[in-house]
Length: 314
Image (cartoon, rainbow, N blue to C red):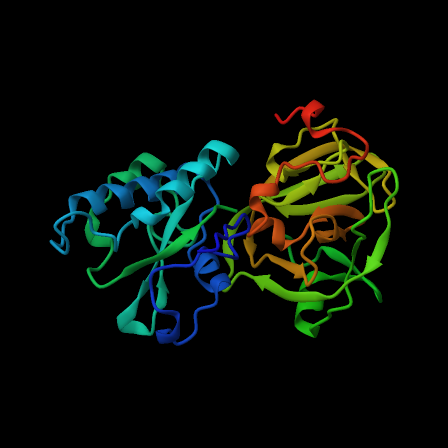
């Protein structure tokens, strides 16, 4: 099975339901519908699911009720926590309703959205009807719709680009390094967007040059050292990287609650460096870093002539 995780709540791993039976269920649909933006709440969902899987309250199995939590994801969840300090949480579908997604506890927009992880853990199992199946895992956490992404025709707000089906993307070339940034024409493979507007946390970056960038907490940004880090891990005084490779110091980072849909896209190219795109003039990771390339999140991809064994990994 090919593993595919999500930072932006737009992709999920291959699940248990038969895809051919679904009315329509692209991966972006389920994670976006059942969005958790808080690691503690994601922990609560996962542990709630494991608890009731073990308890088998519907007497479905002599062992575990994998309609709550599938044992096949145990190693994925452990690896994600150990390597990326990220809690994977299960998502669900209802086979009686065309395999439509079912919002689980802790999701943004749900009645349980404000609960802590421990409160979610202690919820009763009846929040999940007996027929509802676990169908994959998502990861908590893109651009707000007004953020301008660089296309061959110029900078375009990502919402308008998605609505127009713009595919003439510009990204870094695969040969780029931090001191020799090269932009090349690329093509959009597909866009990702939340199915419904939800309330979520956004970080507003302001830089010394007057530049600005607004992204969700989990969005990957290129650091001044040439690595990728989640937006929430940056601090004032550090630097973002402009499209020409120059550094711009962060002077403020403000967190705000925002209601709406967030967007991202992925190029057709699959190598890591050409999945760095330009938004509001700064180098960012595409949606590929938030799915099958999540394991590469902390890999230094823009440094050159430095052996891996002498680069600190933490």
